Length: 324
Image 1 (tube, rainbow, N blue to C red):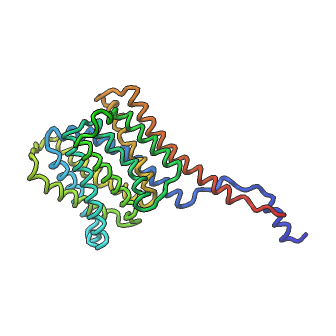
Image 2: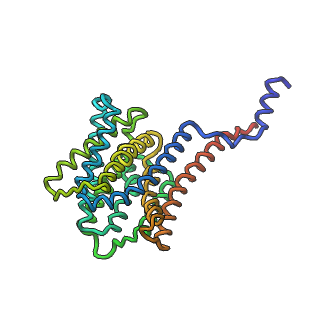
Image 3: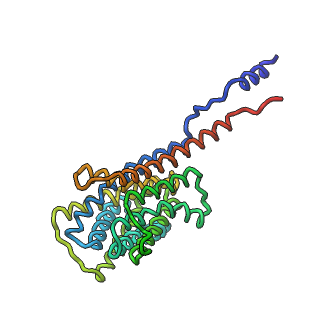
């Protein structure tokens, strides 16, 4: 037997390795998912901060100030990168949908309950894969669909919303528009998010939201009391939740899928409930814990199911062809 034949027999008889390290793209997705999970936990704290701030100011003034501050901070970093034509175009489109999400949710709250608003807004987790399939022919994996269903059911239990009694109010329909706007924003961010130049793209978005919010002020009752709590909320939400948070989301979406982003971000109300309980603002019952558990389970099913699929596919590709 020649040396080459011996090497061939040795290599074909050795068992295939299944513990293959994750690909660079797989590692990038894991890093992006981890960053989004951390930001979702952080965004969960903003509900408590904003709730206190709105006692000292109207929603449109708060949103305008918050996004203007975030835009100023990112402009100081991005500078001339914001003037690149494709960055301006993409930032304008993304900013419009981000603004629509905020304004439709705010106006919708006038004629719907907070629990219904929270649940309907959270339906963007369902709209992302549906619109992605309809608009961009993006077909999610089965594990992602299962995770989406679990997360949607979990949102229903967590918020305690009842939508079947009396149909949908005008506020419910507006909030449904908010969920669609957020879904489109996530999908477009996946397509537009660059590997570099993230700060410039987000800065343009924040300016769009700030300007459009300011244009709404003549049509609402402006009320701002410059209390330490209000100023602190503007700083906290403007610099951290808006500027840093949306930069992290945009950076992550250049490395992961829109469906994974929607699923991970759906854990935000879970973190809100945990922080609220920890600070003594409320107590969660069995229904809320079940809902939060289903949302987390949905994320885990989508994540672990995707990894299991990749490992099975890698294992099949490692199996050598049989020799007759």
